[in-house]
Image 1: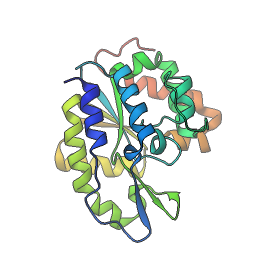
Image 2 (image 1 turned 90 degrees about the vertical axis):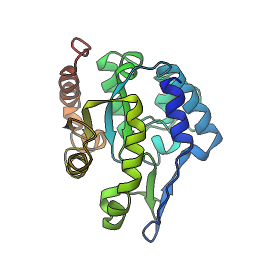
Image 3 (image 1 turned 135 degrees about the vertical axis):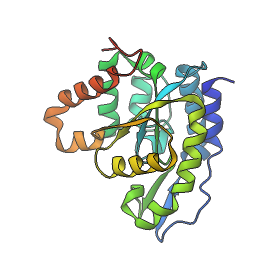
Image 4 (image 1 turned 60 degrees about the vertical axis):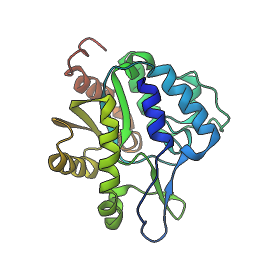
Length: 229
């Protein structure tokens, strides 16, 4: 069974088994025909092997990137232009996706990057409140109730991932939660925080290239990644 088939089987069978706080809705793009189609194509193209990857862990999918395409930090525009996968969605840009694919290009391109890394989120399903993105840590009840779901998802995904180092996107609340979560469940030997792509694009745009360098420097310490720049 290839890594691609393991990933798509996991994603297409995701269910959120707990009740949500008032006005909070779960966002599951994997019930959509177009999302399933492009996910099959994406993971077969870049993960059609059995080698383990390093984890990069975000917060939860947003409405205009992974919440549409099913591919983390990948908007419809970059899914087509960078990954070579046609899709029927409006070709709109999402800020986090822009940074991530500029970083991937600096790393050596999509083939090189996805051969080494697997991007996911603490929750592979997204959340909205009143039609707007909601981070799992912005609601105390959601933060508490999501933990069994997040643990089950992470354990299942570790079947195709390395346990030595994981990278956390977000140096604040996401890193704090994931560090404590990891201490409790011993999923990875080490968690390394990186500035979140949206934070960079919203507040540190002039320093974007410097943040890309920080990502590459962090990745270079993983065995086998030396010289990937």
